Length: 195
Image 1 (spheres, rainbow, N blue to C red):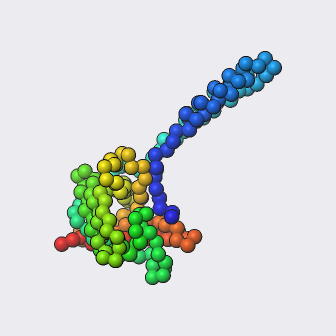
Image 2 (tube, helix red, strand yellow):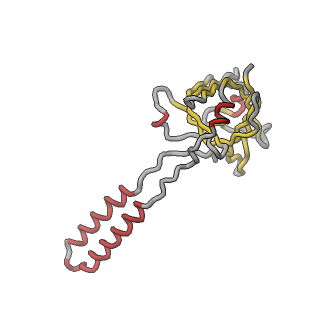
Image 3 (cartoon, one colour):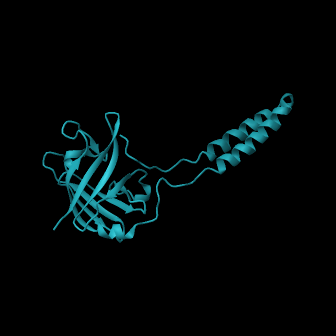
């Protein structure tokens, strides 16, 4: 699936910092390779600074769009999931269930602490429910994590980035880009407010 997932990045600095001193010591012990001692030393210094200057830019913008978050506060229901070929192609949404299982699902968004929950309610599907954390950034993306029981959000390393569009007081859409049959398609989740 081509869902935009983000995960904690592993710092390569530790790997390079461990390998180069070992190589340096190995060659330093041999007088025959005196020129290699200098070369390895410079290689170690240069690689340490190159790796040390690695970008720490997050996967997505973290500046919040509080106005849109407040607009999504409350209880919602997914009334439709659509994408090109949805009548004959089956996709799994959020690595949880078939996209059709999300039609009728109940969602609760709490804007003051960016938490919530969702429950699949389709009778033809296995029951599923999860707590979620979410926020909407200034780029109009919802960043959302599904939380396992007993696991805090900071220990959940993967999530989803979805575009938020057509926000009104009674409805909005989330758009996910996925690889379906080798082509990137937009999967549209239509949310309507529970009255």
